[in-house]
Length: 161
Image (cartoon, rainbow, N blue to C red; front, side, top):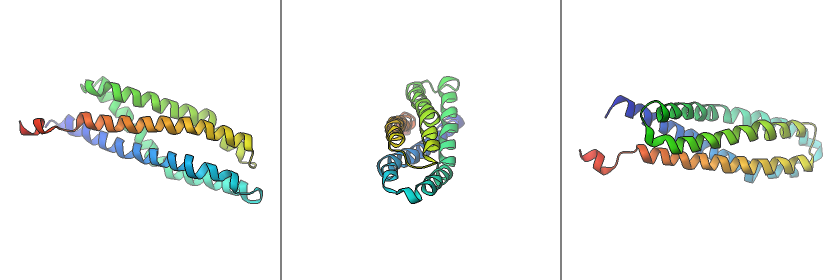
């Protein structure tokens, strides 16, 4: 087994772990946490919103950064490092990450900014709709992370030679 195979697999395993952490987190946010925004109550909503943004930001910083850096490494391996078989899932994953970043930057973050002064049902509805698309894009990322590992994992035929 060559050193590059080990490093590609190591990157792919790290990528898989970070991606699936984020998939689980975004589904939890979408299905559990964001819907509860409407139930918090006016008296404590501003404090709640600020705490949400701060705590979620701290929670996702390292895994999301790891996911992004390992995606960049996988792009390099797929397009410049001789791992041509990874091109399709890595490219699909990169497009899905671009969707996540655009939605996060242009819809989710501004919605949280708008909600910082108090709950607004229209803004919350906009946040939920945008986040559904972001959640689906992250789910695509999870599927591509599995696909990448499947392509890199040795088969029984590979290990017997």
